[in-house]
Image (cartoon, rainbow, N blue to C red; front, side, top):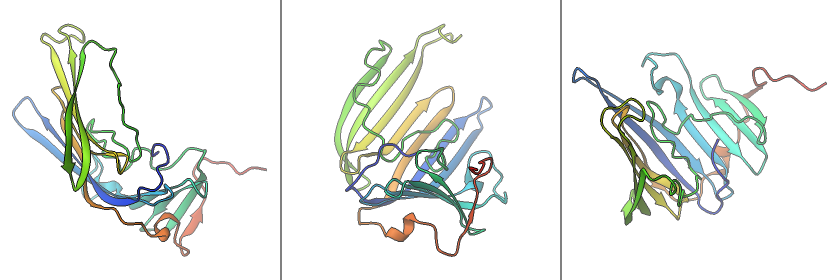
Length: 227
């Protein structure tokens, strides 16, 4: 699910997540996933992605292209199958669809979510976590505040002979109230990045946040009707 509802900050963007994992034989596994994201001034959000492009699935998989809509104004979530032209609806207070889909998390990638609040001060009590400011820069056309955190896992803590450093770099846009770039380097799992590209800050069309009239409404799986 998206984080808190963010109003008066509409935009659309492509969320591109890339992961690289180095194998012991020198081989590398590189994967990429792109999600189209929309948000309007009322805080409604929409994510579009092809499930066949998610981590670990074959390129010729028959899984569909889908869209996940969160409508806090109407109090509903929708999952749209864009190929079968079906719509599944739940209330906003119940289990939402698309949890994790579209955020670019394969292979231990970033969990940067649209609407996620800035984690100021997180981890300050951990003596093995160092945080430093990278200042403010223009990232993908918007101003963003950079932070680098370095987590040191001491030798022997998880069976490691030498200390392990996990470095995370985030760039947070106060205007959009979301991260527009997040990079993570972890010797155990590889490198990953999530970047917002093609950012368009205009108001988004209302029609994007409701099922098309010709889509068939289906019941959520495993959900029983009230008697």
